[in-house]
Length: 221
Image (tube, rainbow, N blue to C red; front, side, top):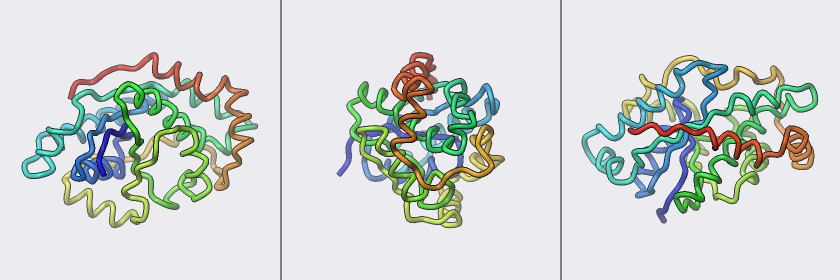
């Protein structure tokens, strides 16, 4: 099966490997980058652009698949202001879950524009706190888009090996800064009712996503 998907691309090691795998499966991919530039600086966006352009410039089957099925428009959506709302005492331990739920809600808006049925991520089980089984479930219910997680069962060493073969590892490597606002002891067990109450208290998940999306920039790849 292949169709249209919105890909959440961070500039890290995992998400470009996920993009490459689904390109080779014939999926039409619309990349989206949630920018925390106000907090973390511009490097994550620069790496994201470089990674996607790397695929478009490659020789061989993957380069051909990218030129055919990778959208030339990278949607960059600012999220720093919205994420800062989840650093309060009453919601900070769930910060990373709220962050991923916000990203998925933003992907929903983009998905409606491009007739996407799925959201593609580089998530793999248990690598970080937001990727426990319970938290993955708490994240995926934030969007009607079905999850595509082609790296779900791979460990980090395997993913890094795949990235090295793709030529993306040198671009992706560097300090991870997406956790700049995160708590020291994040929760590993999501509670749906508490998440939803916290988001309503912060203004409503879909309202936050719509505000972020209204400030998007388009980067031509």
